[in-house]
Image 1 (cartoon, rainbow, N blue to C red):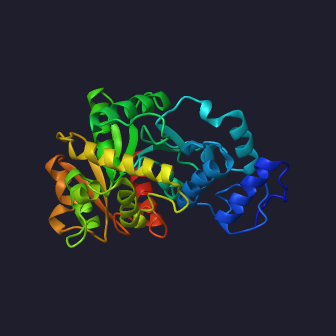
Image 2 (image 1 turned 30 degrees about the vertical axis):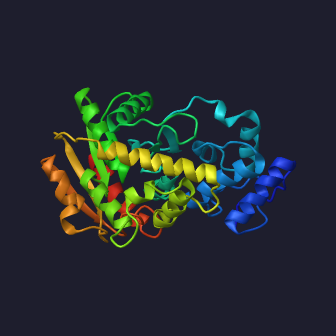
Image 3 (image 1 turned 90 degrees about the horizontal axis):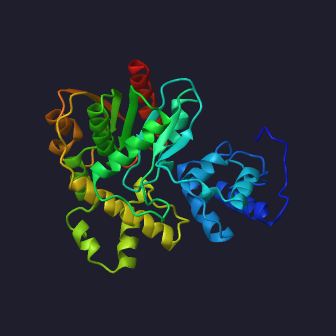
Length: 341
């Protein structure tokens, strides 16, 4: 039950948003002063919300929009006033409140950071949580084509939020490798990273995950890219469904944007040549492996870093960041962050 007295929509835009929320959240009535996430919204429904708002109202809602305006009243006002007028930044305040050292978590292959909503909530209201989103996620800017360029932009943006270390930094999937390169650049600038949290990630591991998603006997990754564009997208949606990269409500434009970002980010990752790291890594490895044992990230990172701590977390690479497994990841990550602070 909501703690707010019911407040009905007062104009056509608020009514449109109410209808979208009621449909996505499977509940009614929804008042214009109720918080989307308090009503049961999660990362998947938030992605669907982005798609539906764009399709049905004609307003373009960026990723940060639903995080900044969590009620229909605030969202309608933000859309009218031009929520996209602010300069684009890779840093998204997923949960900016709290007194502890902020945690910066880099996007996976899809470029978006809404997948971290559950993780930020499980980490608690006293831990500021900033997502690092990919250039091009809004469909306006062109994405970078190298991990080093991406990391350079992210480091500059991160230091505008927190000018000096120590930095609590991490990332899931592709984001773990990008966080590693960010840590390299921060260390080279005389800053300290503690901890560097790698969430089931690795360069060789990414290749193995691709093989697992495109197994023998089915169409391979290169074969996929030779298909007509609409068939590429349909096949990608099917293969990536467990990772929930593309919401069911996404139209062709949004789905294609996510697909292009995934392709671009994977190419950047596969061209990346990681150098040895002098700091310490905490690897959070999913217990349900999708790859052969020799490709697991626990065997990859010690080749680059002498200090690697491995924490096993529930789920597999695609499901560990979502319910019901994310609470197990958050528990161990929280312990790691507390110890570093």
